[in-house]
Length: 192
Image 1 (cartoon, one colour):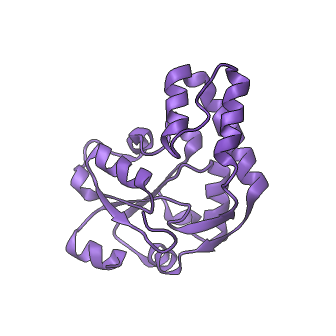
Image 2 (cartoon, rainbow, N blue to C red):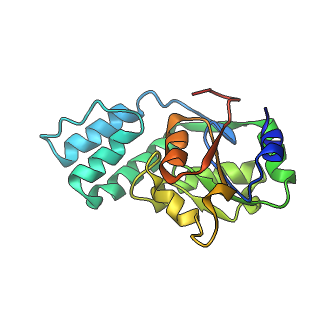
Image 3 (cartoon, one colour):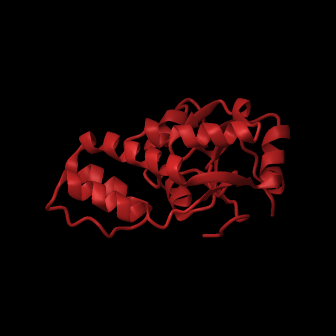
């Protein structure tokens, strides 16, 4: 079932999109990212044993353990890594067309990528003006699956059943579950 078919059966008003591997795939080698984060943590705290960790929760665990003062370090390291290793993007054609043409919804992006990476990608795809809000790693303390960024999108005067998270990862799905909204799996690049 594609997104249009899903929305025909499950009416929503607010659509929240992940960016990487949902709207488009960043052509980037992620294989060293988490080992580089481990080195960053060791520089901050030489006694840190938090080098091998789960893909999404590791950064959140580190911030919870050592406080918000490490968030800017993680953000800067992520931005540097994405700038260094990003070699373009491959769009998800059906989803890009959907975003360009859809009406009657408020669209947002909630990504664990840096703001610079997300804005550059959306601009390249001609989508930047389609979104009411863009929430990136730079605006939050904790990345998905933590719902930190959802609070920047969610209007408490609206019903949560009117929101839909569109993403490709267990972190996207976990965030949707944590806040009590529906989730649509975008499987074009990589299913969960």
